[in-house]
Length: 548
Ligand SMILES: [Zn+2]
Image (cartoon, rainbow, N blue to C red; front, side, top):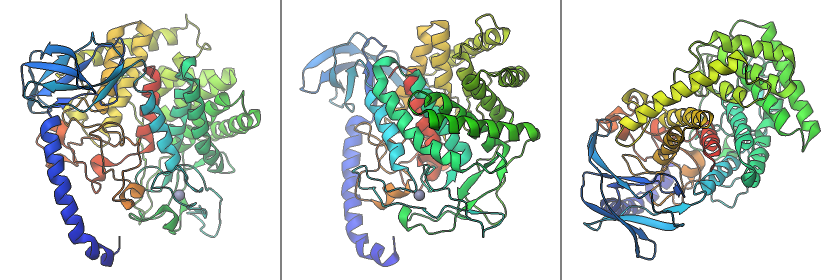
């Protein structure tokens, strides 16, 4: 926003802000003490809400005002990471589909939620649609206020020789900004395609939507491969352009030198794509597989990690890493699955054997080994009696049980420990949820599966803030993401379906003395409130694993 226009609008904006502030406080007085999943609960699952600082009776009320269930709050427990006592409100036996809210004896009420066979199916649809609004190099026409003409059509020139133009339009903007990063783009596209693979037959339309949206990024990944098979690490400007319209960002954007992490992720995502599109588009599948194999050949010829660091004078994202063993593993696994070639299976096996213990922490875009293992375990190429399968399965179930124990000890059933509330903590939640859900399916253990679903409930409002971290999902959802197109359409709702980073007790420690509430729904705070394609893709994958 330019200075003149800011001065012109400021007095009016202050009045609006004051009115909204009062309205928000009034609303929060009647809703914030009751935390529910604002999308809802599945028929047959355990249904819990949490009430902070209260005891006594509660009622679950239909949208039309009729009481459907009455109960007593369970024993209150102190949540150390929240700094408050909270009590569960259980209404598991209420399985009648409908829209409800919870009411306490003092009249305070929760946001509404649904009970349905697949209450999170609309969330998955929103989360996938949000990717469409992140598209670069094309006009975005979704009917939202944030639609814009084609942007960044000049991408990009080589960092090492700016006279050389390498056409790399397309792909998704990464997050709140407009950069395009191979590591995160390949991770997100790979996850969407793996999510499509996990969706049951009854969710065929959603699988088609996932494959269609991922295709946009896959085509970009094909452009980002250098002639020698490596992948340029990113296409960005030297510095973040600030909050400007995408089509108005005329900064020169560079293809930065290749990394082995980006090349490994690109190989993995394109190998997944080769499988995913084989039936519907053999030509696309063939291009993807050829590119993935070229990337692998480059990795094989360059066994030492080639890790990316920003050159001096560049402040756009790094997506740096400490090593590339996990990216090589993911690439080998997906190439083995796509081709069945013994050489890839041997490479995958050797890399997996080296990681002991295999499961130690949540994965992320920077550590894709857990994801590689989940993919490997779904493939028939790894025989039931194979010792590697035996080891990975038993380690996964053991680790998932450890995580489920952690959830059971937390008054809100959250998997996070105080140290886990760092930048992008919502992604940590999701990466643990993947292991809980995959472990639950493997062991046939409903308690693990429920612990995985509980993490989704956390993200969608059953948390200390009573806030859904996905824009547009729920009555009390994030409204002010650090997302340039949403910030520019200031008086309009943000792009729906964006999951933000969440509480951050490091960079956001001034926001609260308690890690779970180190958060503020303000657009300027990118350390807690920025969405990103990795977060949205992780959510899509978890919703698919949960059978949403
Ligand atoms: Zn763009």
